[in-house]
Length: 275
Image 1 (spheres, rainbow, N blue to C red):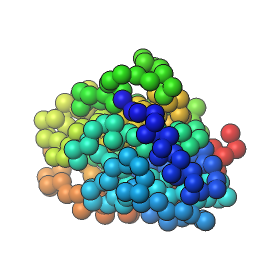
Image 2: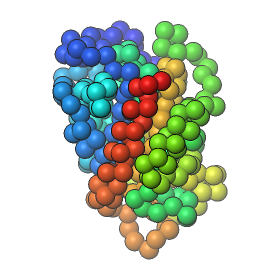
Image 3: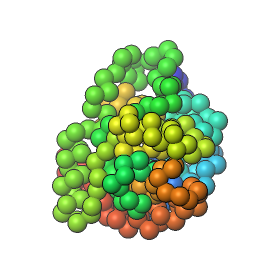
């Protein structure tokens, strides 16, 4: 579990470089880093400068913390995230969430690129996560619990806040952005799933599968942060189409969807700032 002294040290380093206190945090997934380009009056802090931050080696992920304003509202964004498949511990993967909480963030918008398991979905579409399946068999909260960070046995029945999901759907409709609502399955990666594994995942009830998001969402919920998670469905999962899966294709489709994604996140930020 996280060391609160390390969290506060990282918070101190970041706080000394900014003069705003964002309540909204963003985690930007593969190919979605361009959202950070929309920030005004931004401060950029490379991950390697922040105490105890790891560094992502994944394609399509920068390694920067961006603090600035969107529509005049203070926001902090992770441009790139850390993955369990890169060899990091889940403490390292989720450490930035603890730091965001320490900085005063109350709402976390998590984005990712993932594979569609639901046969009615298509590449390039968006999915609002309603719940998740942890198929990796590990949990970021394993270890000694520090009550200052959260309770020992957190309730995960509303990780992806139901009221905020209604807000997202309302914003999507107002902006004529089509969006599914579905269950996300967390797979460790880095290899894509086999066709048999996708059949299992569909049978278990998931609509999409990806290699991130769930650890961060669990830790954010543990810290009493409200979570919104949105997936860009960049490909049909293994075995659905007769073509090999490619990370280059994932990035390409994410780029095609980014305008709709940016519009949706803009709308969410504007609405959250009035709550």
